[in-house]
Each structure stands twice: as structure tokens, then as C-alpha cells.
Image 1: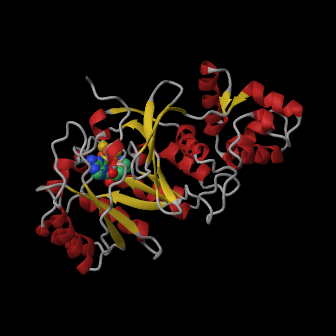
Image 2: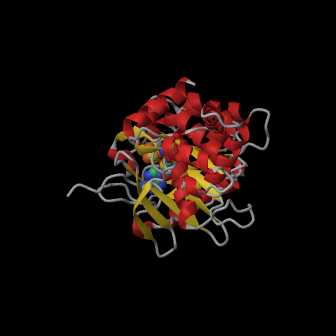
Image 3: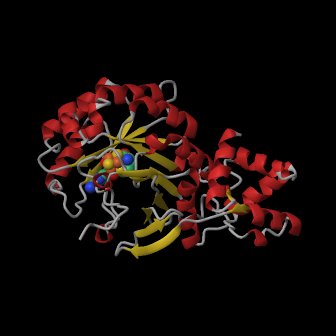
Length: 368
Ligand code: SAH
Ligand code: SF4
């Protein structure tokens, strides 16, 4: 209740109206009861918003005129504004989105043959400052709200006209990766709320198995985040030991590799279906030697984790001094992991020509 009051207060400062995409299903029901309507109206409203993608109360034809007018008067359903859109030669689609206060994030859709993943952001900028990441070079501005996180995916659905929510078999926007800008576990409350809205089966209905959340390794929040969202876990490991990891990821000084892997063990305990993806970014001469690969194998074996790797070739961005590893080096690295029983596919970079690949997203234009 307290939470709704706060939302209401901040909304009234801005527009005197409450933004409905900021509310969980339970909070939306409370609101509807508060304005004197029955429970089932909340479900109808939810379906209009999240199953049909409607933003105009006037179109909600199974609600009475009086209720539609009441909703219009007190509430809003807002989408982030699309500032620019770019489509890569490989069909990767990038949107620059703007929120009410003028802050911006980028979102990417990576199409495969008959499906595809939408990569969404959770923060404007990022406080983690990973040396290889364009987002990390831009500092942290603010967390995105739950509505802003959900709103991104709804913009993608608007663009591809995937309303009403299609079945799993027919949807192109079939998967979500929480791998855009920001560290999701540093914005956990809003991310949990957003993912619960996105995966709710009366609405957008993306299955939890088709959502993957990537973290740089905020160890104490990993188990909680997975329990509260039920999505898949990816860890940005990027190094086989603390010396290398601390050089490229400052967060490693706070949460060491061992601490992160222990939490991964806890997460997998008692549930054999839980696989973890370890993302490993290959940086020339930094973390890409055969010795590094062997050390990585030993590390994973020690913790007995059920895991696959995702080897990511480094995507350069303006002003960054790292270089991508040679093709041959990447292949040798992948084979060492593979021979040790860990699948280690090499991720094909997508959308590089429009700076839409991993780690290239930004919120601000480069300074002139
Ligand atoms: N903050 C979260 C999720 C977003 S980053 C995290 O770090 O896990 C998504 C992935 O892109 C991470 O594995 C990240 O390390 C990787 N990445 C960052 N910069 C990159 C770059 N320049 N080239 C390739 N991958 C990069
Ligand atoms: Fe933040 Fe992830 Fe980029 Fe690191 S890689 S700076 S955690 S967005």
C-alpha cells in the first residue's frame, strides 16, 4: 500500500495521474477496487494492456463508458518514446528510447530465422564500470522503473505488430535477454516486478524459460533474484582468476570469483534442470590463452557447476583500447572447453555496423 501511495504521489507531481504500467497485477487490482470497481475489471484491464497492447482507454470495449472515462481521468498507459531506429545489414534492430524525464536507453532485437531475442536495459548507464563496456564508460544515471523496463518490450511488440500476444509457436519476439544497459541485480525490486509482469500468462506471457538475466556477479543477490523471477541465469565471468578479473571488472574487488561461484552452487542445489551460462568475453592478450582456458576448466570442475559457456568476441567501440582475439585463438579456447565437457559456442556478433552488439549500447551521444 505504502508503495502505491508513493507511486501515486510521484505521479501526481508529474501529471496528477498514476501510470498503470508501474503496477504489479496485485497493485492494479487494489487500484481498481479503490475506485469502486469489481475484481474482474482489473483482469480485463490487464488483458487490454498486456495481452492486446492497447494504450487508449477508449478502445477497451468491454468496459463501460463510465469506467473508461474514470480511467482516462486518473491513469495513464505510457510507452517510452522512440527517438531513433536503426536496422543493421543482418536485420538486427536498434531503438533509442526516451523516458518522461528525457533519459535514454538503447534496446536491440536480434532476429533468428523464425524467432528472436529482445535485449532490454535495466538502468540508464551502469555503475559497474567494466573496462570493456561502452555502457560502463558512461557512469550510472538512474535505475529504470518497472514500467520503463516492461515498456521497452512493449515498444518492440508495437514495432513488430505482435499484439495480441501470439502463441509460443508463432512469435518472432520469442525470447528476452536482460543484457542491455545496466546491472539488473542492482535494480532488483524493479526488475523482479517487470519480469513478473512480462511473464504473466494473462498478458505478454513470455515463458520464464525464455528469459535470461545476465549479471556481472552481485553475489549476495543471485539466489534471491533467481527465486523471485524464475528466469535463466547468465554470469559475466570473463576471467579464470581474480587477478585478471579485477583488472577488467572493478566489481571483482567486492565479490570475488569464489563467492560468485558459491552462490551459483546454491542456486543449482537440488534442481538438476538449472543450467548456468557463463559469458566469457575474449580480449586479445588479456584472458584468451590456452592456459586461461585450462584454468577456467579447473575452476568450473572444482565447483561442480552444470554450465555452458558463451564465448563472446569483443565488440569494439569508439575510444576503447581493447582488441578482439584472433579467430584461431578463439577456436582453440572453445575447443579446450569443449574437450573438457563444457559446450562453448562462439557468439556471432550481430548488429556491429549500427553499434548494436553486446557492450556497445549507450545512453548519450559521444562528446564532440
Ligand atoms: N550488466 C550485465 C548485463 C548487461 S551486459 C552484465 O554485465 O552481465 C551483457 C553482456 O555483454 C555481458 O556479458 C557483458 O560483459 C558483455 N559485454 C560488455 N561489453 C562488451 C563488448 N564491448 N563486447 C562484447 N561483449 C561485451
Ligand atoms: Fe555494467 Fe554489464 Fe557493462 Fe559491466 S558489462 S559496465 S555490469 S552493463
